[in-house]
Image 1: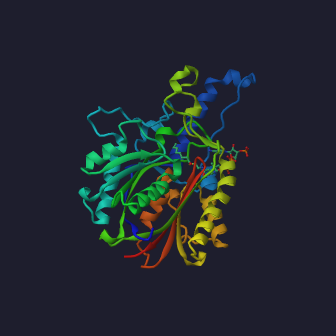
Image 2: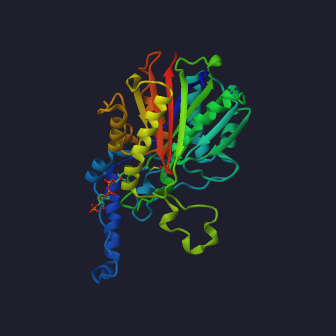
Image 3: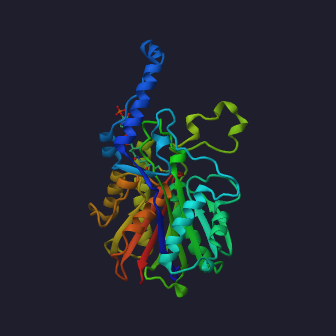
Length: 374
Ligand code: CO8
């Protein structure tokens, strides 16, 4: 796959941000109101009181300090606890298309490409706001791009799976430049009333230009030396929202139609999966671990990333070797590792090697080994 490069990345960050303090204050107001409303049942032992959340727990357990969101007031309103995102007319841009356009334009600028020079668009993310027409086709139209476009979803691994697909499409001669876009509006499917998960996610959009090396003209080219993907079925991260829901009215609106996870099990099971995949991929490519300057890991949990990098390197990684963005952005699903790459690659010299790695629901894991060329 030596002839394919990542030639540009772009990032859209929402204007509004929520600190742990703001989130916990709103959550605890909801808890107190709930416990008051259900006081008699709780006293009589007929139901359990809800437990308050805490900033100390959130930061210690996850490393998250804040998150960007598309709409803040609705999330922080204890009577609502979900973003206010009014529906748009069919002749208006969808929200995912709108933020995709911003991230894509930035990536194209870095790649030194105009829209006409892109042959294919892949929108790869965890949650798509409608089944059809594909958001990718809408985005392709909004940017005036020729060729073809489609959506795909591999949860938090969508971006690395999308990069492999883009690289393969180019290597097979079916396109010469592919735009991969990750519009992650996680707040739309996060249960802000769930103490175990209400702090985990944030909203953002990333975009990546992948193209044939011999036509690339960007000053930020990273050759894709190889990609490796793996999936292993698990119910520990699940969302039962779907088009068949209306076939059973009793389930509509229940908590399993939003993000649900067994966080501790995910932590224990995914860490070895990821470490083995990265180590195996490097071995297969005959790249000594010592030659890896940086790992841009999926951003779900700080301790998880520290453990993964320790297992790969055989020692604790420095912040420089495994940069963190989840403190500011929280888990932005598939966009996390791409934000880390976007923010922390400019110090790479030609020849320097790094690994972009994502992991999440499915389970799914993706590794993309890159080398700076210009
Ligand atoms: N405040 C205070 N205490 C709390 C809170 C809270 N908010 N939440 C839980 N606790 C308590 C628990 O009740 C428990 O108490 P006790 O010991 O008395 O039972 C204690 O704290 C410990 O709870 P946990 O065992 O749950 O805590 P952990 O240390 O395991 O930390 C984490 C929880 C942070 C969730 C951690 O397990 C984790 O990060 N795991 C990895 C998860 C992960 O990587 N998930 C990937 C998900 S992303 C993905 O793939 C899908 C993307 C789809 C996008 C969807 C958009 C919405």
